[in-house]
Structure formats: C-alpha cells, structure tokens
Length: 132
Ligand SMILES: CC(C)(COP(=O)(O)OP(=O)(O)OC[C@H]1O[C@@H](n2cnc3c(N)ncnc32)[C@H](O)[C@@H]1OP(=O)(O)O)[C@@H](O)C(=O)NCCC(=O)NCCS
Image 1 (cartoon, protein in one colour):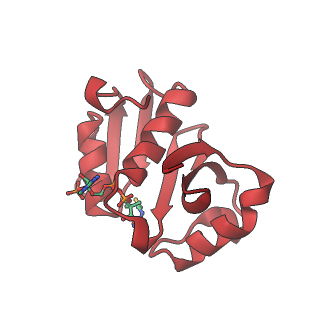
Image 2: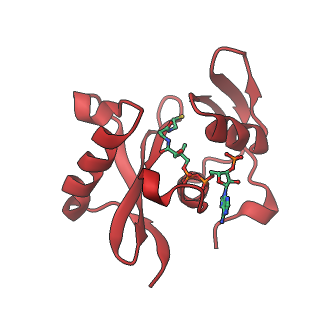
C-alpha cells in the first residue's frame, strides 16, 4: 500500500488531532480558528501527517508529519497536493513559515522571505516536484 496523500475525512479527526498535539507547532484549527484539515498522508493506511489551511483572503498553511515518518517526502507532497488541487498557483500568497524544511519548500516555490518568517510572492510549482 505504501505512502499516499488523500483528502481529509471526518474519520481522520482523532488521528489528525493526535498529530497536531504531538507536533512542535500549534495548529489553530484546534484552538477554534477556521484553519481546517485539507489532506492527510497515510503509510499502509495509517494517518501519519496532515496539512491544514485557510485559503482566503490569503493562503495560510500548516503541515505536520509524525516524527517517525519524517524525511520521506510526505511534508512536501502534502504542500504540493494542496497547491495543485486548490489551484493556488499563479496567485499572490503569503506563507508563514517556522521550519527549515518549510523554508526550503517556500524558496523552491519561488516565494521571497521578509526575514521574519513571512514568505510572499506568486507560487509556481517546479515541474519535477508536481504531484502525480
Ligand atoms: C516540516 C515537516 C512537516 C516536514 O515533514 P517531512 O515529511 O519530514 O518533509 P519532507 O520529507 O518532504 O522533507 C524533509 C526533508 O527530507 C528530505 N527527504 C525527502 N525525501 C527523502 C528521502 N526519501 N530520503 C531522505 N531524505 C528525504 C527532504 O529533501 C527534506 O530535506 P531538507 O529539510 O533538507 O529540505 C515536519 O518536519 C514537521 O512536522 N515538523 C514539525 C511541524 C512544523 O514545524 N511544521 C511546519 C510549520 S511551517
């Protein structure tokens, strides 16, 4: 079965809540704000990662992957799936980024840093990293 990215469903709520609370970031959807889970990453059917987002008025994404499943490309795939499915390319966005891996992903997408964790610009998906 391997690793997959698929849309979030209500059945994933408990797993996603566990991932959020085990993560170094605070996912605001669990603090009552409107950021919602969009996609999950699974390995052999088990939910091990999630991306949350609000898309309007600006794109704001949070992503977390369980420690035991990092550095397998799942974080990147969650970001690219979201950008692709929601057609967020060719649109001015601001991403708030707190993690070196995510900084590299923001730079790879063509965004520019203001030096304070805000990356702005128009997203373009590099052909090599497009989700299949
Ligand atoms: C940030 C986070 C989501 C990244 O998740 P991830 O699944 O490890 O991300 P990826 O696997 O796509 O990329 C991680 C690194 O592994 C590398 N990698 C990807 N596939 C790999 C593989 N098969 N073998 C070895 N390395 C691999 C990537 O190139 C990347 O390297 P880099 O950090 O030097 O750029 C994860 O570290 C996390 O949950 N952190 C805590 C929460 C957080 O900080 N979220 C971001 C807020 S902005």
